[in-house]
Length: 134
Image 1 (cartoon, one colour):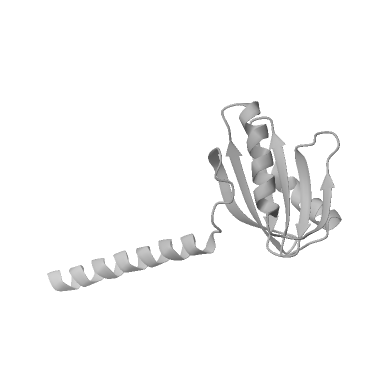
Image 2: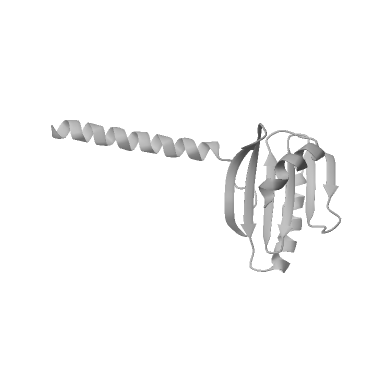
């Protein structure tokens, strides 16, 4: 009887480990290493799949500096197909690269990133992804 319980216990542990490993493999790696991670998730909206990430900083000065470092790193080695700056605040940008589209928003001490898994025209991307930033 104890052999059956041991086998069942090992089976349950194996299944739990398999589920955890599967969940971790489906989640993209963290993109913004600066700051403290607040949110990291995959969201499906209007049939499109997006990766949403938010990081916090100790003050607005550090977040501005980090914003420009992150923005430069995201475009490094890629061809920028299309880009749009928000002229109310130069810390909001949407960029379409050859393999994805992303938006990067600085909200005082927080930077939010929404990234698609395929290139999407900026007008369509902003329409779909804008609510994910808040």
